[in-house]
Length: 142
Image (tube, rainbow, N blue to C red; front, side, top):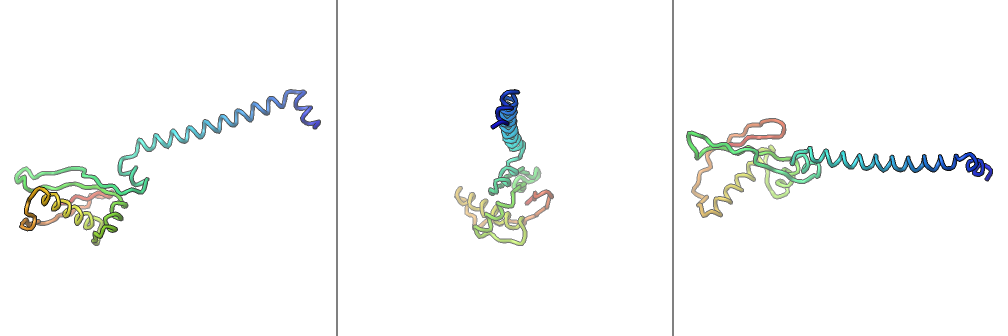
């Protein structure tokens, strides 16, 4: 009781209250700063990185290449994350490597597109498949 009276007499109670209020404001500012930094970092992440961070399957066609001498030949450059492989495996796709699993999916996808367009896919030869590991989780399949 005497301590409180003494603090009031010399104004220390007001200084302590102001200090406490300033600490609370600083804490709020730091929390808001962290939120802003998190949002900023999300904006800097690629779609693949955002999906991977969210643990969601992701696949994309990075490029389409056509052979200038024979336009019937070419290849797609695909990229994916580990969660896409998990999704493919749970859908029944198998293979010794990620590339083999994705190739099986992509081949089936292309055949389905052809069938939907009325193309008799049973008479189409698939030729050969060339797989090049580009590193950094990327593969070129032609």
